[in-house]
Length: 394
Image 1: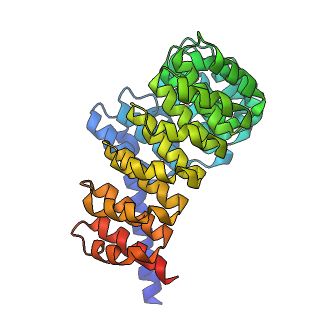
Image 2 (image 1 turned 30 degrees about the vertical axis):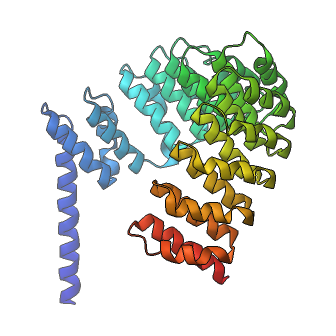
């Protein structure tokens, strides 16, 4: 019985100490000394104390970034999703930081009951708050928010346009794909990238004709064609093949040619193999790299001879990608060339890629070479060779 009394005393003492510590940290959050506020917010982030919530909400408006960040982390760790409505009034707080912090927290908590409040907050006078409210709508993931986000695609702030494009990609509302098309010509590159990625995420192929039109116009900005090519490759619509092949073969912009090669690999059409073989001879390294990678994805044996020749490309990244492509294709005629590359190339990445390719092809002529490579002083090379040797035992 005595041990039970002692245990209870220890527990109560610990609880009292913890309560005292919490009160001490809450008090420190309002200290004029910055370091004390930062330390208090950091400590409360690990304690998950509901008693600290009011003080932490106040700390969201702290002028010091690290205090706000740790207060937000503490609230995210402490609040439950069903408590999200408690944050709604803070979306109208005088402090920009509190409004932004509340919006970010609502996105983390993910309760759909707060959608109307966040939809209002996307029109906040502060760029920071608009951006956080938009991000929160994307994280909550309710497609009904898409139409509200459309209005922010023309926001004066690039950050807001970027977040709106990203959020629409997360919502995957089919009708949003058309709305994102103009952003492929945005003045901000990050916005253009986000629009292209989101169009691909949404996956609505109804925008393919519009993308093709942008690709085919002679006067179109090369950047626009680049992002259109990316989206076409990710959408995987066969209607894009001819346009992408033309861009690869005749495009004056080298980055567009590289993106067209990558997109053709994404389409999965083996009729693109001849154009991609020609891409291995392009004067721009990224085009050769993307062509080799695409040929590996397509796995067409017609590309083997060209890939073997490109194992001597002056660029090590292209050589590595050719070795990988040969392994994916799996044609045994590539074995002698891969063995040669494994012993004569000066780049360890190519040695590793050649060893892995030989393991995938599984031609026993490669066993002596792989056994020798398994004793390489380079750990990435010998591990690759050891893995390759295990493939012969299956």
